[in-house]
Amino acid sequence: MQILNDVKISFNFNLRHPRRNESTTQIYCVVKVNNKQLKIPTALKVYSYQWDRRKQECKVLSNMIDSERTYNIAANLKLFEIKCKINEIIDYLCTDETSHNATEIEGYVRESLTIYSSKTGMANRNAVPPKRTITATKLLKQAFDSYYKTNGNQKPSTIIAQQNRLKKFFVYIAEAQKGDSLRLLTQEGLNDYKEWLVNKANESDKTKMGANAINQFCQLIARLINDVLSVKSEYRRYNIQLVRYVTITDSRKKEEKFKRALTKKEVNTFMAYRPQNEKEQEIKDLFTLQLNTGVRKGDLVRLINGEYMTDEEEPDYFIVETEKEEITAVVECEHIEAFNGKYPNGLKQVNINSSAFEGVYNNAIKTIFKKCGLSQIEHYKENVAGRNVEKSGPLNELISNHWLRHTFITFKLREGMRPDRLCYMTGHADDRMIKEVYEHLTKTDKIKAVKKEKERMTGMVADDTLDGEIIAEQTRENYKLKKQITKLETEKETSEFDAMTFLEQTKYINDKIKHSCEE
Image (cartoon, rainbow, N blue to C red; front, side, top):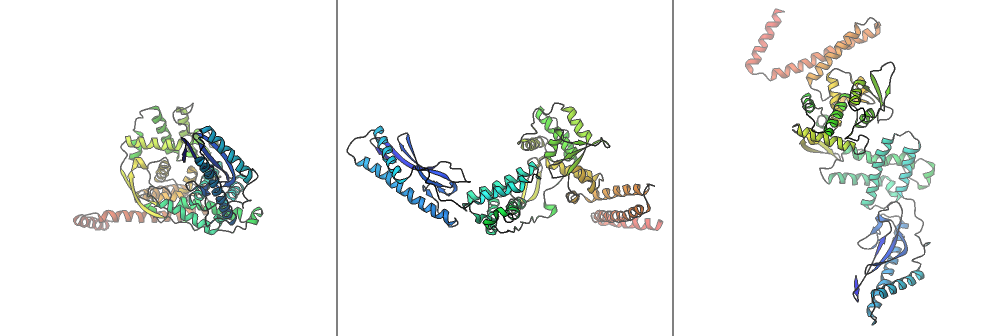
């Protein structure tokens, strides 16, 4: 900034659209005479992420494609020329012996720059950068539309989730300053993206970006490259090759993963809570409905909105099309009917159809848990970019609505429901996830589950309608179940025996011998 006869004169270069990354934006020369701006186009364009605002010039990076680098070097020479011209105008005004007021100075600067721009083509709208090679951003957007939107087989929720993951890659392009070139769509480019995500995750242990999240981000880019850009004929001229993504492994053991059901005592404590206002009552009822049905948050909304089907032969159950593709969940009518009977006109305080619903729902549950005193410290391990981190926190801060689904599954397994049947109620494609929950049951839970299964199988054998082949199969199953019960009871008995004192062990052995002799 310079001051001439109490008139402040300054100039700088601005971008017309400073946040635009998908295409170039114009560079303007802005000259200020006191509070009046003279905005003059330079006939130069640049990508916003290639503009150095502090240095007032275009970035020239080694990883740019040749045409970009050449153009940015030429643009910087042009900007330097413009700076010299403006300084020349200001110097003339400073050395001129005539006293000029603000209006006269503004007029002279405007006239001088107008003459200069007309001679140099600064104001010529046809003076645009040379035609640029297509960007990685544009190709990825086209590939995404082709893969997820054009075929029409993807659910809206899937498309939204994948769009958010694609945005992560665009953030990477801007922050890492790699240049929006086709190099990003190579094996080296994918590896760099993975490394950037890992570094982001490791910046703080508070991050939620685990191995699974990083894998999903990278797998999306690999999928768009391998299934669209490298194989479809319209992209053949770009010579994009197949890439391979090596997933990051979650090295935690099953028992280290923080997945547990609420205990009956914890559930009863929550149920005994008396809501202090109408909103808390609605949250409590949502909690109860989800606990009794085991559905995901999205499917809970569908249930309340009446987005389910009925079966004429089985009127006591509803069928819900879950957010997972082509998978349904079976829900007992009594629970949703009881909820709808209480809220015939819908919820008043909680908007279940809002995009912010899950956050509101989870925060309200956390608040009630704290009021109930359910705040004991939980210790667990969390995976951060493939690295296991020891963590702990109070239950009321860790609780979320997904715990209710885990609790529902655990309770049903304890009641003796078979995993391959339970997956019909929870909307799982198979019983793999159910069996993972089963691993967290205690030995006593497993003994009870096996006993109930044996009773069920025994009942089937007694049915006269079963033919000989089925009876033989059930007999084999009963034999296997009996062996399982014997093994589990032995383990439990051994554990109890080890906990006895020496005198108690001696008495226990003598009683066993006496009992054996009597038999």
